[in-house]
Length: 453
Image (cartoon, rainbow, N blue to C red):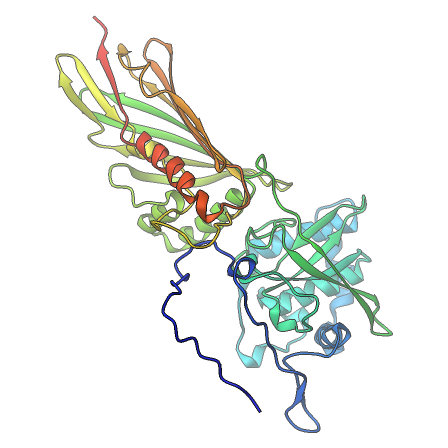
């Protein structure tokens, strides 16, 4: 017996274009799922469970297939000792980095390769996401390291509902690992995050409710489930600091750039992933758009590489870029030149392409960005160092621009942009557009200078 409900009015605007929105937070909805059903009397097939213990038992069955562990204990005793680290936790961390750097991690293997012993995946250095999670689970057990399985849900798909007993509501499965000092480190095995370090949490999981599953006794198949909140980076953790040293050649009107990006938090995580993908594809044109948010029109990237990575939170990394701009300079008078700073101030702006919004915008995280451009030119005197200097702040964040002539021939141009709220109501959306428009205007700034006599 069922009923059909039909909405006959035409007064509901669509909400599908509201980027970074969580519709479950603001709109009424019906959550439904099927009760436990059986395909036949011998083969249980379930979409939902009657209790969380049922969900636990299902994962316990997946993670305790004893045939998968054949030979693993011996490998741990003979090979894990060779990895760097003074204790078991540090050796496990080294193994994770080893997997990220040398294994071919895929989303799904062919059916014939899905149920191999874990030792085979280690030998072949090719593994899928599910088996990699099981491998880490087994290694942690052998190394006697405290840990829990983590079941999380993408924040943009809604919050985990503890009252709805269904494993299908989770989008990510990972591990929360405890070091010798009691600190927690998260690990989400994935092809997409195959170069991430131990402790990095995807931005769309940060600050969300998750279920933590601890197996109390593997021999007795006892486990307990609890609910908590995943950590969320602060404004100080998610940063981009860009230093661009621009060298100007008045004869050729060319500018060459040495760019240093220092990234931390979600910017470090996502940028390293992008660089890894495009280093394999060797497609710099597409890299420009993913890295800077636009397709560079005037500046050409000649080379780009990761110079250093800090393996501890907030996982800061340094990216170095060499670039050039053939006709960056323009002669506008007798001995007077102009340089447009267009592609030096390419902040990673929070999306604002809708004219208006119906739902609140939930940013990926708090973040701030600063770009400094020292302009070097022999015998140059800058003429407009007092113009276009300002600082603006509203409920969403802040931005600013500053020009300082430090010594003859060197001008420091600095631009900043920060998002300081975790939720922008629809009625405050215009404030985000206001910030973004001001920052975009930095790109139209022209610096005027003349040759000193």
